Image (cartoon, rainbow, N blue to C red; front, side, top):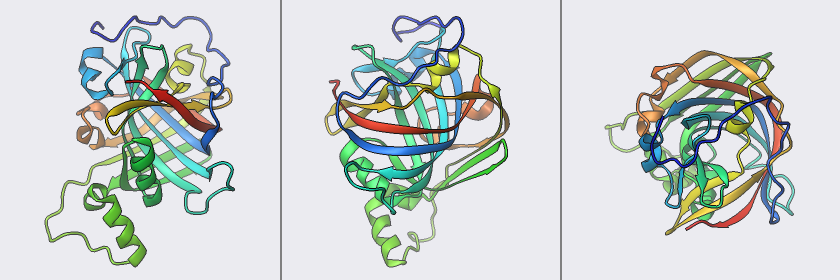
Length: 276
């Protein structure tokens, strides 16, 4: 595939046993990730160029740009130096993301959406990080090696997170009128298999951070974690129209080009810098 995505990186050999790079600044948040599902599709860089923040471009790996779905359970959220927060301690997140790179060769992700039911996280992420959290009923289930995640948006809350926070606090949410917006959803179920042997696996799962649009700037939030024990996965169910709502229509119309699972890891985020 061609386009303006920058120099392609050819992936060869066995996957590297690598961790995300050390943080340059004190962690802002620390999370335990569990039951992580990564699905990725190859795309032409030009098709994704309009979906990433200014100052970044789609990362071309193994000849393609990549758009993905990742879904996981957040547990034991901490905001150092404070202890774990009960309100932010556990939640399911379902994301649509584009793999990105900037002019300093930092390989990250740009989230098109992060759907979750945790209203405090939504409010904080919009205000402080520029990360596009959206309110949705999101839940997860694991039985043995079978992992399932599902997200269904409540459109009125998604559009008005502050109103949603107040309504949830008062126990008075009734929606608006009788005209409902479309309920964009995503549902995935996979069965985890053996350790992934593809050299592509760490390129798709170990990213240096998040590229986000915050106020009038593109910013980079650094992400760090230990080496990931990545497993291959078999997709049993993949459905929904969530990609249609965030600029990648028809994403689920074909099977992903990569399906991977990480059982658990600890993720730390820290300030990187302004990209542009």
